[in-house]
Length: 212
Image (cartoon, rainbow, N blue to C red; front, top):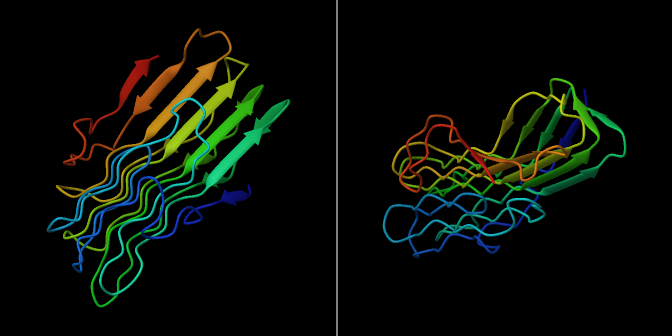
C-alpha cells in the first residue's frame, strides 16, 4: 500500500525539451511531453511532444516562466524491472506540478514517465502521469506524460492507469500515451485518453485504443 511519487520531480519551470514558450506576459503555456501543453493567453505557446511511446524514460517538462517567476515543474521518471510478480495496491505517480499562483498565474508542468516490466502484475493500485492543471483559464494545462507496461502473464491486472492532460477547455493540455504489451502480443496496444475532456491541442477527448 505504499507510494512511489516522482510528481513535480522533472524539469523545472521554463526547462526541458517540451518547455512552453514564454511571451513576457503574466500568463503562460503548459509543458509538453506525451501530449502537447495548452497555450496561454497571448502568444505563450504550450510545449511540444518528445520521447518514446514504447520505452519512456524522459522527465516531464515545465511550463513557461512568467514575469513574476518560474513556471511549474514537470513530472519525474519511474523505471521498474521486476523479475517475478509486482503487486501494486498503492500508487505510482509521475504527475506534473499544477500552475503556481503568484502575483500572476502560470500553466501546469507536463506529466513524466512510468516504465514497468514484470512477469505478472496484480493489485488494485493506480498508475498516473497526468499533466498539471493551470491556475486559471488564462494559462495552459500541462500535457500528459508517457506510460509503458510490459508483462508476461496475460491475466495481469491493475487499477487505474492515466496520462491525462491538465486543465479543461480551450487551454487544457493534450493527453499523453499509455502503451501496454503482453508477451503473447506481436505489437501491443496504445491508449490515448483525456478523461472525456475536450481541449484545443487534442481531438481525442475520449479513450482510443490502438493496436501498434
